Amino acid sequence: MERDFKYLLEKYGEAGARDVFEKICVKLFQAMYGEKTKSVAVSQGDGGIDVLVGDLPSPQKVYQSKFFLDRLGSSQKQQIKKSFETATSEYDISEWCLCIPRILTEKELLWWSEWKNEKSAETGVKIDFCDGSFLINELKRYDIYEKEFDDDVRNTLNNILTELTTQRQKIYDEIIYGISTFDNLEEEYNDFVFVRMLESANILDTDDCKIEFFNAEIARQEGVSKDEVAGLKLYNNLRTKIYSIWKTQYNIHKSTNDGNILLNESYLRIEDLDSTTLASSADYNLLAKKGILHHLANEKKLGWIEDYIIKLSEYIKED
Image (cartoon, rainbow, N blue to C red; front, side, top):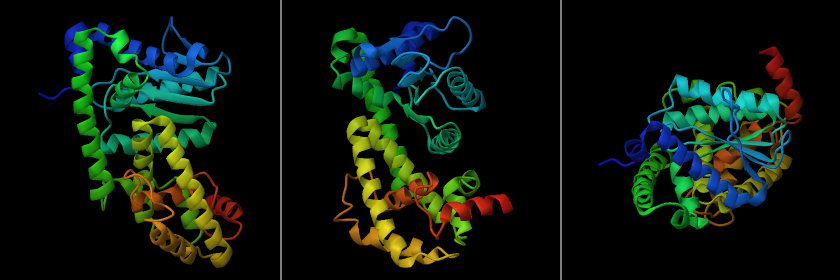
């Protein structure tokens, strides 16, 4: 039988299952951040915050839990957008994190990546999410799992964790190791900064770059889901090394109007160093490491021609 958080729904009913899930989130973040953590009771509507770290109106980090069990359809996506917009319009927020009790599919991850990057660039707020597998693993890590839940709930959560971990690995393997094309990927990423950065440097064949960007996004999320601290440390370490690779190649190959050579030489260096300087956990394969270049470009940390920020602005205005 397929196991997920519907077990809680069957056991406690919809309202009770939602309460258990919110309890899981609150207990976890209280353990992670201590007395700075506060749960928020929303008296009317959706305030976009269930748990905050710090104090209003400028909390360090906020969490919003959504008990979405089946899918991220248009209704669920609208709720996510509304929660984020409400929270960021009312408060000065640095980080906003969505907590859900399930694993996202490939296309849901693609939507999430697009929306997250767009809103992060627009608002300056760091956006992330915690899935059900991550939450249960963290409960065990912080010794909450055994203390806070009775045998029935612990057994249920164990079953859920097993199934969610299997689902997540299957999706991850399909994306990272099997993908050569992805439905609608080209259209979904067309307006991203890293794509415009490529186009402004006369790099017109961008489909592989989009796939690499997506692989890096999934690899990052996979690492963070296993262990937030270690996952972010690994990702940031790779970013630093890959930026250094780009910087060296930029000094050698920069051009005033054509970035194809610089991009190709940067790729070649990453390939050369894949098993040595850039060796990491299995989360980051070669595609994902190349994709980190485009993560950096999406944040305007690097480009493919001289004066790439100016050229990017000019290209966008002309377009």
